[in-house]
Each structure stands twice: as structure tokens, then as C-alpha cells.
Picture 1: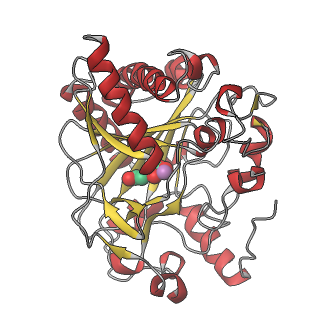
Picture 2 (picture 1 turned 60 degrees about the horizontal axis):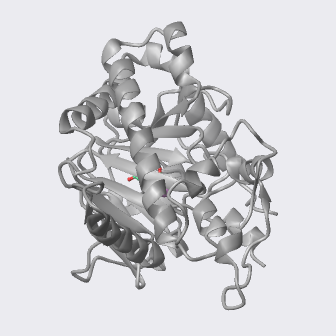
Length: 366
Ligand code: OGA
Ligand code: NI
């Protein structure tokens, strides 16, 4: 599994210098720079082979979850919509999902406050240590990728953050809103895993019993206004590695794009709505029935754009946990498509590699 591109020494030097400031791209933006520093500039070959953006009116499916428990017929219709979206786009939006608007607004505000707090205090949380339940850094793959993305990320892990919270000197707006959102987003994750299980023709609890939602992480991204957005990535194109992602975005500007029929399609932020996408592990356990799709976030000259991605990636504290295509989904017509994975090895193989150039799932294809 080789994924490392050789990073030239002069680039490495610039990356180290930037990382040592612990101020992230927000620090660069605050300094008033007008030119995009070299480490963030996309390579000419990357820019020239980029796909078209949004030349078509098609949009990611929107699923209304209101009354999903009301009666069997209503639930079946929602399950059908979830199945179609998961087999084609690998993405859908949900409305009436049960998380109140006030909770969504407060968690966005709390995350903004965290990123915009006094730099000297924020620096205490700047680290690349994978074991920290609360940390901030600029690009996990900063030292592995060819181009750094114009974003800082605050990462919050559960379990971990909830039990650890009293040892942090956090301002109340952030910790209270994050805890409240985390509980609701965890329940929504389980509701969605139930609908997805049914969409696969399995019992409602099937995916939850496989511990897909046993532990999750919030990646709270902050994309400041970018001086030369046409040359930059916000988040480079990638596939999410876990089972399921629930993403909340603030309303300032669109940025998230999904690849569909050879184009990049904008996923506009709409009030109250959440974006759901299938990750590579769900593609694997569904034996390829559900599709994990390539997506990215573009940089903008307005900001800050804030997005909060909740990743359900299985019990990461149990490195020995094994996942394989679900027995019931393998047949003569649908022969087994993937090898089994050991969760700890899977995670290790992408943690310090560049997302953009390497998809770990491909190594498990049969
Ligand atoms: C991610 C992601 C998109 C965004 O964190 O995996 O795809 O809009 N984020 O920030
Ligand atoms: Ni993603």
C-alpha cells in the first residue's frame, strides 16, 4: 500500500515553518495577505484537468424525514428514496430530521468562537497527535499532500471529549453547544443507519449492531476568505473513509461539491438541512451496493465558511475489529467484491497519506 509522494525539501521547509506558527490559514488570512502562499497553490496539471462545475441543473436528492415513524407506508417511501440516493449519488440532503434549528445555529457559533478565540489560547490545542479527543490543526495530510487546503480543522472525538471536557478550559458556548449537537447527531446517525439497513433489505438494527456508530468524530472546518480562491483547494477531492457522514454547513456561501456524471455539482447550504453521504466502509460492507462518492470543498473569497462533518467510522478504539461484505448481500449475481479489513490497519494506512491521490478502499477490491 504505497501512497506517499515525495515532497521536495524546499516545500517541506515551508510547510514546517507554516505549521510551527500554529496559527493555521486563519492566521494567514488575518495577516491580510493578498497572494496565496506557494504551499496552497494547486499544480498546473491539477488545475488544467479539473472537471466542469455545475453546468447542469441537476441537484443532490432531498429527502423529507418528517413523520418517518408515522406509518409503515411512509417509512417505506423514505427507505426507497434513501436506497435510490445511496445507489446513485452516495449523497443526499435531509430536511425535518429532528435536530432543532437553534441547536444547528449554536453549534456553528460555538465552532466559530473556538476558531476565532485568542491565538495564544488556541495554540494550546494545536497538535497532530491522533489520540487527542480535542485538537486543532491545519490539514491532517499537510506533510503528505502536493497542495495544502485552505482550511483549519478542529476535531472532537466521541467517546473522549465528553468525559474529558472538565479538564479543558473551554468557553461555555463551544462545549455546551458541541455536546448538545453531538447527542442529537449521534441519534440521527442511528436513525439513518436503520433506514440504510432497511434499504439493503436487512433488519433495522443490522448496521447499528455492526457498531458502525460506536464512536464518532466531529471535524469542524473553518475556511477563511481566500486571497486567490481559483488557485486553491478548500478540501481537496476525496472519498470519506468511514461508514456515514452527516455534514452541517453555515449559510454564507456554497463550497461543497460532489462529482456526478463527470461534473462537480454544488451542494448549496439550505437552512435547516443536513448533508448525508455514504463512506467507503459502507460501500465495502454493502458489497458495493451503496456508493461512496468523490467530493471536495472549494475555496471562496468570502468567509468564513464553517462546516461540521460528523464521521461514523466504527469503533476506532478497537483496532482488531473486522469488517467484511455482509453475508446476506453476497449471491451468485452479486459475488463478493471486497476482502475483509481490520479496522486498525485500515485507519493506519490512510492517516498520514494524501487523501487526494490515494483511496485505501481500492486495496481491498477483489
Ligand atoms: C470532509 C468534507 C466538506 C466540507 O470533512 O470530509 O468532505 O464542506 N468536508 O467541509
Ligand atoms: Ni469528505
